[in-house]
Image 1 (cartoon, rainbow, N blue to C red):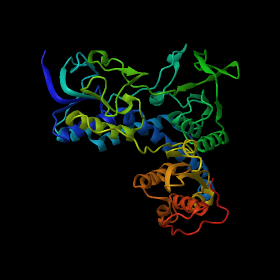
Image 2: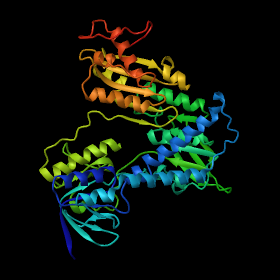
Image 3: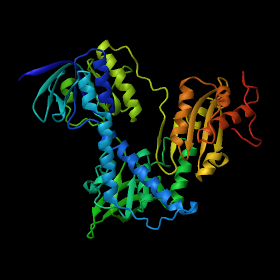
Length: 481
């Protein structure tokens, strides 16, 4: 059988895969990108993009329901679920058209091969299971992404997963979401806004367990005020069973007893392992651990010519991380393993209601390193733009190193929280100290102006003056910890 040879073969056409292929081609390598069906990966096709459109839908519902307060009468407030799904899918197509992956890759000389999943048949050769075609890569970059974790439960086949919620035939009247992480929390907001009665379950003791504790508390409080039933610290989920009326009985253990309730749909959002099934990694000598590919600091696997980036290596399940890792992996594949993959700052967040976001160390993490660090929290209710928009729920918290006078972490809840934290991330990446941040003349009235207010409050609370500080004094009564 003929085998086409390349300098670099990239497996997977999501954010990591397309970035890796582009970078390898830019460096002059003869490159192929192997993808089973369509580029974009989970992010564009069934993940981030669809979820953000659903979040936009939920936000529109909120605005419609409060329009009367501004003198706008909207008498009919009904949800057309098929129309919502159609809008999501149409937006996915618009994103694909804007990305123009096939043309961009072709312009760089990358061979895009959409002939079914790929699997290793030996350390350098991969076979496309859809066509039987084989390609050989002197080096291989695995960017195969991930998938929702499947739990070995009786009746697990009845579950819906985040990437399949658009397949629900109708808007569920009663919905259970198992998993209170980023994805689960966003789906809670969406379906509650659309009118579903929602139960949120998690084994963790709090929602958003990796977020700053104050963020977690604020989001949970908002959910409960919206009518979401939140049950954290449960002992486990036991089973799903089909009811005679077409619904689903969900059984779980809580407070030492089993509970069973009926739902129209149950969404399982309980993890995101790498999508390694059928890759034939053993034929390439690529080691795995806990459902991810093991890599070193250069993103090199146990096979020296094979690299892994993005969700495949299990280090950070974020699109921005996937892009950065992919470029490192491609450069190391072409130029030799020299660059290290380091995520110094990875802002993340979710489009819940209210939004939340964070970057850097949480307050708990910072205090574990240095008890003398400072933190201050500015409520959105004390800022003009949230008052104007009637979106006063939320806050910005800054965590600061007292000695070096730099921001260690930023955490926010509220309208535009992700954008606010992104602005702080830019300052952190540039090494801007708090005194400089306090002197920034933020536009008025904006949500990002809360950053300057937080910085000024920190300056006021420092017992020894910050070097070079010329910031305006903070309002009386501001508090930092």
